[in-house]
Image 1: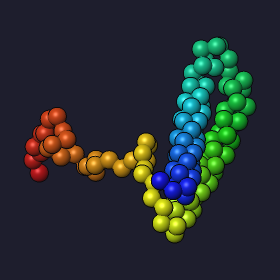
Image 2 (image 1 turned 90 degrees about the horizontal axis):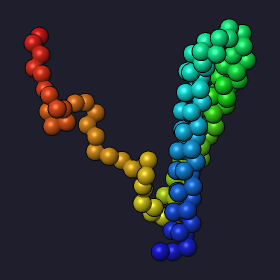
Image 3 (image 1 turned 180 degrees about the horizontal axis):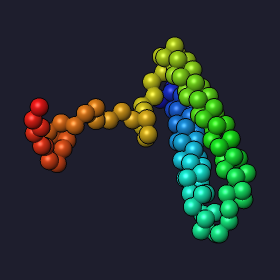
Length: 117
């Protein structure tokens, strides 16, 4: 494996991990946003107490959405450089393409029910 291949593999590992971390952070912030109203009720507080936190979490999600788009753009740019240099990096992890049908088939369903028109 050449130094270029090693460097490209390291870059791929880092960008893929950064994308997964961003997705996890967005999921966690979304969970917080979803649960805040119920938690404020459970604590016996009115909506005014949680509103600043709700607004802050919404702003953070907006910022994370922009950051996620920037990471994806960086990934595309790095992929273009990779192709121009003729470097091959085996994809793995979350970006690995799986042969998943786009719609249910008899093979992928536990039970197939025939519908009448």
